[in-house]
Amino acid sequence: MPEVIAGEAFAAGLRTEFLKTYDKKYTGVEGLDVAMDRNLPSDKYQEKFFYFESAPYMKLWKRGTTMHEGKFKGVQWTVTNYEWAEAIPWHYANRQDDQTRSLMKRAADLGKNAALLDEQNFFDILVGTAAWDRLPAIPSAPDGQALYYGSTRFGLAAGNIVPGGTVATAPLIRTDFYKAIAAWLQFQDTEGKPLLDRSVLDGGITAFVGAANVQSFGEAFSQKMTSHTAIGAGNVPVSNIVMDMGLNVKVIPTQYITTNDWYLFLNQADVKPVFSLKRDGVQDVVETFQNSDLTRRTGMESIRFWERRGYGCNLPYATIKIDN
Image (cartoon, rainbow, N blue to C red; front, side):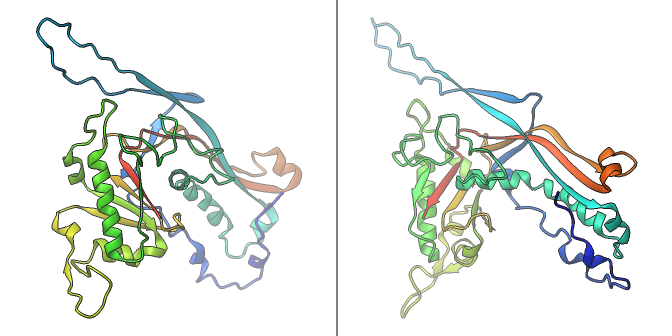
């Protein structure tokens, strides 16, 4: 059984000024709620979701002919709740001999880390890679495809993936950004008609980008005056066209994205692309001599956290991947 290695905390006279070295400082990626519906209530092992596709549009009714009759179909998909848990054991004597009296406080940080489970699974879904200790498989969208699909989807041959031109310069980033805007404005419903109104852009756009590219994205979306081409003789700064058009773009760099791909989300879309289910909230127990037969037999105490949650994808018309 693994346990906390506490031997270094036994020495008498230990100074404690730096106990906060690994206190929890990271509280999560900002802006996650624009891309993910979180904590949808659940009361069973699996939840079934449903929506209807688009209704038909009016058609010419020529005199003397029968009125045209249209139809639409429904779509159903299933999301499973899984168990999530982690425990930290230690020998009771180590806790007693800990001169800093901080072992229990540090062990309790596990509960704070539990709050990041949505974030971790969100980015696994975003980049399409399942971590061994999280989701058993990346969930598909209701249309049976991945969250990002580069073939016909929403009426476009490239679906909700835009081929990128790298993130080397701000102009290249802005060019790809406007390709994404153009794609959104061309998305079609299941009847081949416009899916999104232009006004949906007015609610703002959030871009999740790799932390390594923070400079180029800052130049692309935050500088009021920017270079139109690579810096060189005779190159005159121009105003930032993104700002000129009044588009509100929030760039969120994260180490969860390790490539040059980046991901755009409509802030005020009615349906967010990713969601989580809350079957049971986080629970915890501390095992001691007072309440645990295992502790009374072995001397091993522990703190244990567990919960039940599920993760799924909606139809992802509110997000576009820039594929570099």
